[in-house]
Length: 575
Image (cartoon, one colour):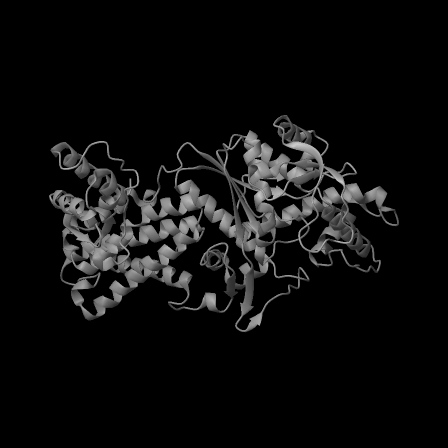
């Protein structure tokens, strides 16, 4: 339980006592009562809306309720002051012992501090990256990979049973294009001159694949029509591309639990089964769609198709699942894939899509709602575009890929830790500028460096203290009593609540923001010690005070390490 939840329980107990005394009527609904940080830290450590929530059902003025509640709460030894503000908000100031208790708790729990049971007993599937297996991952995929992986880690820390999944889009026409492109490199490996026409993949990454195909089959396919080699090269090329993609993901420390093949849905009855489930629910019919809004395409004609009644589950229009010629639409296998997810017993589904898939969100949500009878929520997170630049120059090309900057290029330029942290310095649906020079700067304006610097600074103090024979000891925490020190402890106390909020909202960027704020408060206290010697973490003539202060900064280091672990970033002990 977080400290905020504990104080909320204290507020509820005080309300129960007021009811028992007859000061408040019984039967009050308290679920909407919150305890959270005040908007202005100068107002106190925590604020509660209890009096505002209870006023109407209690038929009393909010301030009157707040006054009696404040008196009751002030009797608790953990609460130093309870002040009524505005129309009836209640601001609370907690005692120093509470904050020293937070420090002791962090030291005791270590890397378990911040873990919660929010998602206990719930299975969640996080599908991310899912790039076409036609080449190396690009910088846009990098953002999706980092976001999805950090979200999965965040949910794991919050107690969920998480499955990380990659959907291999190996069932569409793009894989035929890949096979033809590999065939050209195969001919090239045999010494032939080839030309890459529009629609093929000219990147150098296929040179090795063409050579590997030659090594495997010799000249078996040279001069043959594609009916003799297309299927086999499709399989071969897809496997090689997935090896490449796995290697790219490994550069970022991303490991998937499941790789699910789209191709496995075709010819196996799985698509038919999923649509059969929808048909049994009266959600599949034969019909003609209305023409597209706006300018009608020249080739549009009213054709009868097999349609899914997605509008009954929140979509704007019904969606075709089978074309008039009997071929599946792109949507049909996606329905079958999510039917499989639902059938595997997940309680929640999360799909991480690129920004260009925004138009797909409502239909996918409708499909999952229909397939699960509304039991399984689907949250689709869109990752916006990344602009990679070096100063004023935008980087758009890669020697290896030919047309885009690859994930491997980015990691080579700045390293995996900087890549991961910076990808989470904006909310997923906000565009991101990634300046490869700026993210390597040693300044406060570079969040990843600033957070890592805090962790390294702390360990430099711990090493110096160890050389003097001084270690952190909670028995000496009574020496941590300056308001600036207790404010840092209060910031530490926010971490477990932050984890629960971020996990519930599916927003791992909140962790990065929090770590930057925590590092800022630590650095501010360090700098304050330059002017006020009693705040320095190493006290030359006072081992007990040093030991207590080491507890405080050790707790900061633990929280930074735990938060960076969620983001997939390795903390550094020296810089």
